[in-house]
Image 1: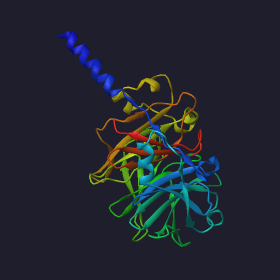
Image 2: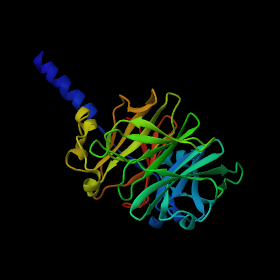
Image 3: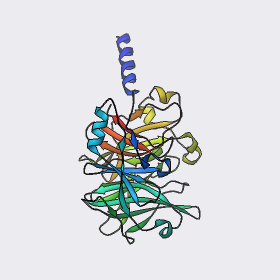
Length: 320
């Protein structure tokens, strides 16, 4: 009986500690230039849009069928990402300390963008909104459609890295929510109807939340939870309760880097963690990957992308 129990516990630990290997999707064209710094992506119908951090007047786009074909073929050819027009004001003149775009979200033909700025050593977020043309895919954001959003705390180069829609509100997730940083963590709800800003309480999550998927029919969404050890001083990590409940996978056991996906639920006007196991990614031994973007890929898994560290990478993450 004791031997059986030991074997069972070992088996459970092995299952919980499993890491997921990602599959790279090769791209070609200007999107692979590290200077683009892809900082967000989202689906508009069956088209995947990529948001460069730097203001250039365009986004990148590839189709779902292109991704499906790429994943199904052994002999992969790089997907050529097309540029689509992104008409906005010159935010470098409109926003003091404009530091770039951070996230994108579509809701029907409405588009929402998160913007980061740092002026006089004060970090601020902004939300801008506009529309997309169904035929040309041109996105237009009028100059008046912008709202400044105060960050919960002040950490250099950190603001709202995610936007997702919930009950006709744009939910902006702040990226640093550790227990040593915020006693009562919260995120921002923006009402497009009256431009009102409100708060929604959340659990403390160590490290960074760098992007999130759309909210599903059960009010659940997945986020990237990432830690680069160089951010230790700024993030002041507390106990990693997620790893205390789910043992680390093989590559995570020998590294201080964290690359995982975690699931949240919006319930009783609060954001909580679900009981779903975190999806730990097999780490790259050479260097950490700064995952900045995530979307669901039907019921198969997720697509995730880096900004420029160590290079622009688009990958498929299957469900466990």
